[in-house]
Each structure stands twice: as C-alpha cells, then as structure tokens.
Image (cartoon, rainbow, N blue to C red; front, side):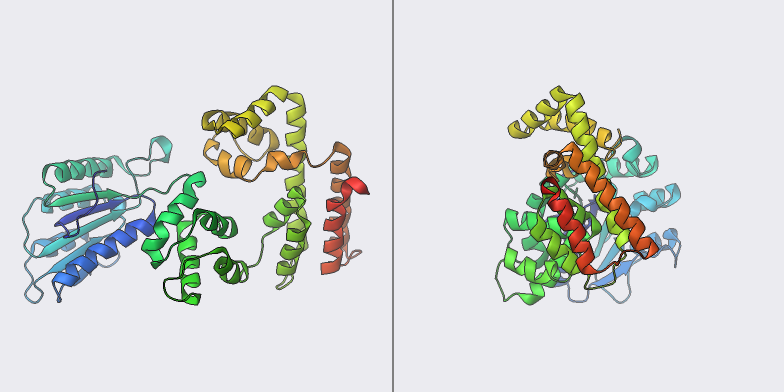
Length: 376
C-alpha cells in the first residue's frame, strides 16, 4: 500500500497486514494524535455481537450532541459482509466534520492464491480505498504492516523495539531473544515489556537483561533438548534438564522428541550419501548466500528427512538452515545412530513400565551416553 498515516490524522485510515504489533501501534498513534488536539475526543468501537453494522455507520454520519470529535474504530474489517462493506463504502466519501475513522484488518494485499484469506468483496474494497488514498491524500491514508520472513525477524525486532518499549536492542541480541522465545510478534512484545520493567530508564536491552528475565523464567522444551544433543552441546543439555526439573516432567515426550530429531539426522546423512551433488550444492549455496539454491536444495533435504512437505518451502530457513541440522547429521557415525536408537527404545520402555527411574540423574546419564556415543 501507499504511505502511512500523517502526523495530523486524515479522516479515514486503513491499517492492514499481519504485523499486529506495528499495526496496533499505528492505530494508537492516530488516537493519541487526535486526542492531543481535542481533549474531549470520544472513541467508538464496532462490536459485531452488540449491534448491526448499519447502525454503526449511521452513527458515523449522525452529528453528536455532546462530543465535538469522535474516533470510530473498525477492527477485522475483512470479516464484514458484502452488505456491510457496501454500507461502509457509501459513508466514506462524505465530508463528515469532527469524525475520524480507522479501519483495521490482518489481511494483506500481498497474500496470494490459497493463502489469501480476504474475500473478493473485501479485496475490491481495499483496492478502492487505495485508489481514494492516491486521489485524495488529505482525506484517505493507507498503511500496510507485513511480518518479515524468519531470516529477517532479528532486523524487524531491532527496528521495532524503540517503537514498542522506547529502548534499543542490537541485532545479535534480538536474534538471541528470538531463539529463546520464538518469532511470534505478540510473544516478543510481551517479553520486551517484561524486560523493560526490570531495566533502569534509557538502558538498552542486552543479552544480560534477556538472560536474567526471559531465559531465567521459562521452562525449556523437549525440542531444545533434542537440538542441544544434536549439536553435542552438553553444557546446554544440562541447563535444559535443570530447567525441566523445576516443574513436573513427563519424560516420554522428551524421549520422543530426541528420537525424532536423531531419526531426521540419520535420514539426512543417508540422503547426502545417496545424493552427494545435492549436498555439496547446498553447502556451496550456504557459503555464497544463494537463497534460491538454498531453498530448492534445502526443501529436498527437508522432505528426505521428514521435516518438511513439498508445500513448506517457506520453512526451509528456520527448519533446515538456521537450525544447523544438516551439520549436526555429520557429527555422528552410522553405528552411533544405531546405538542411540537402541538406548532410547530401552529407556522409553523402562520408564513406562517402571523398571527405570525417571529421575533427573537418570535422564542426565542417558543424555551423557548420547553425547559420548562415539567413545563408548
């Protein structure tokens, strides 16, 4: 879409896209700008459960007896019926004094094909609104906020942190926080807010702050344990196990995750042996940052390992490239994998039948055997 809303809000603004944090921040900025100019500005929100949309649009064009300025908020506009969209389209051309309208949707013009969730009617509404914004920029404005691909999330977080909590964060520390809590923008915003509370004013968010707040207050997952074992990072394995036993632990979940991870490593190694040209081409593309070849060969490796389906090319970066799973596969020999699968099977049956204690020490010993498998 075109340029975002101006500092002095126009009468009608459309905010679109799946970056909910940035979109909501833009909405809050519009509200704050209006309320800073008009002390008595009132906010009216459309509630689909409490009123028909036609009544809401009637209120927009009906002068208020008590408030001089009103802000009308319409969320999830993509869910409006064709009749409601027609009603809204009929209202927008009017020059309504002392009224500001903010329309929100998590749909995007960038969405295509099967991934596009907007109805044809709403798609036409967006196109019409964009055209109005181009022809009448003093009255209409559009802004589109799209979450970046996984490999650009650290850049996004670095840019958005000053807007979200008025602090800075380096790209390296942003990447570390994403590795800890995942790439969901709402979760990242929540973590930033928690870290913000614990820091003195104007102090940047750094690795120490992230570790003291985000890393120290969450339980690790079974997938992190499997990844650490695959990397042969035993210090990290011990940290994860310590975290697990702070609460209740159901070890079969962890044994299953470890087995699936090492089974994928085993399949990757076999695929590389059977398809050496694909493997060397993938390694070369990684060094040259050739994203097209990375994605093409990475998808083949992901499908061969059972980690991806043929329609999941968008997940090649986090699952195959960023995880380093291909490199992990070559840290173990074929006979190592056979021993690991045997140990995992025996341990799983043992804890389920009660023959093996599911204690912290017992689980640490199993992980230590996997770590030292080549020497045993």
